[in-house]
Length: 152
Image (cartoon, rainbow, N blue to C red; front, side, top):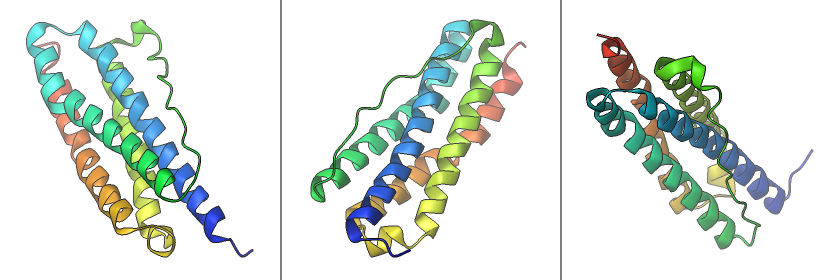
């Protein structure tokens, strides 16, 4: 099947939205974890995980909106998902955030590895995808480090 440029751009935008949604899940999960931690661990979570995830979420939403605007495609609102049951605890929320960021990173990597950003994208989009990958790339290491110290 041969895709038109508009269809390919829409596919790229939809894939970017999927990654953005996953990062949004991570941000919400980290917010829920923050509420369950003592002040010291909460500050560490905010610095090492929440701020980078929130920055990535904002950048992903902006990339989505900017790309759609440059190519006359419809944008969408990114809804705030539910954090889930409080009973999973801070470690559970952090694990959920790590899994969500992992999904986002895999989606972004697949998008970068495809030819779509080159064929129908633009330099701004390719730069934004690389920046997003950098923002989410070290997330799991920081999370492992934090989880090791919780409960001590």
